Length: 139
Image (cartoon, rainbow, N blue to C red; front, top):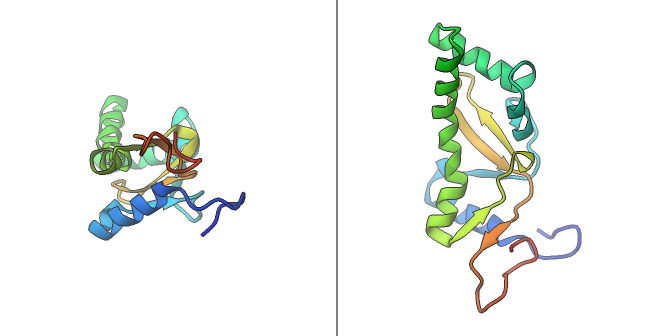
């Protein structure tokens, strides 16, 4: 797999593949996800409409509540699982992917539990090896 500019793939891709081989639940989609159920990270900026609103509504329905604080707390617990996208890389490889809202998408099961995350562009920060970054996608 080559990037558009002819560069080799980001080492972040290989790291995620290694993690996935260790445990299937650690799978991270690379690239812009396609298919139903994905919520772009930027959609988390508004709760009044769109896919994030739909998720919050489903959470409230499943909990039989309209209390916004309860729904927000429940979402926070579900979304907390997505932190593994950064924590595993940092703990095992001293690497932190760029997980800004414009670079991620989230997928939740129909039952509202967290399913997986997509990293649109495999970029990040890594401790230098021999004083240089291992790839142009890494700072």
